[in-house]
Length: 224
Ligand code: BEZ
Image 1 (cartoon, helix red, strand yellow):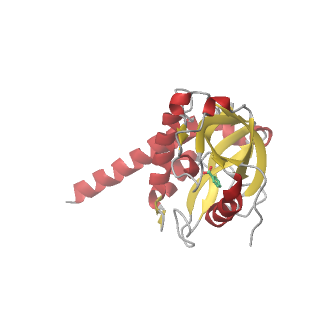
Image 2: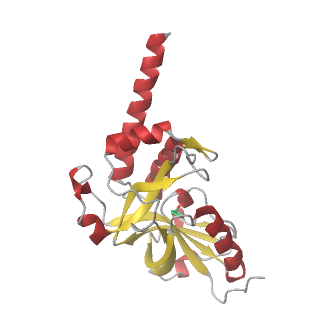
Image 3: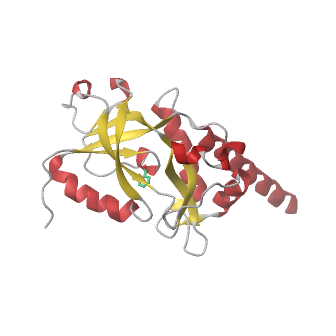
């Protein structure tokens, strides 16, 4: 039997957690963390948007200083200083259950870290499960748990050619659905967080994927 935590837990989502929240949260705050770069450089296999034979691609976070040492800047020069996402507050009584759930859903290839989260501090964008919560009383920054695919983990790919990456994403699917839908949902979810929360790496990949899809469709139409 798991022990009951003595404190609430804050969990930061920068990928699917933005639109697919963890269970039992009682408050969701849009906002950002700093010092990281979001990249679609993590392999994800049968549990998500691919299969063991043809694994899909999902996002991970890189330490900004590590990213700056890479050649990625040639293809995606811009990496916003803020990584936007959503922070979820898990009440103490539910922390053990939710971390167990998250560790099953997401831990494969990811490592737990804690980092300061800055709330967008706009009550209009705050979602509570119980309308009694007063989000304006919450002091930002908040220490948040975040799952990071470290470069040492076997699922970490490193710099990817954006066009090859887009083509791979369009071709991948798994039990959780089309890999491209993960990308498109991420793009939409990011754009909804704030007027400045778009991420060029994500929107450029989404644009490339739509082009790949259109070309494939054009090719099929010609065959008819
Ligand atoms: C997320 O932010 O959605 C997330 C990313 C990697 C592992 C777990 C969750």
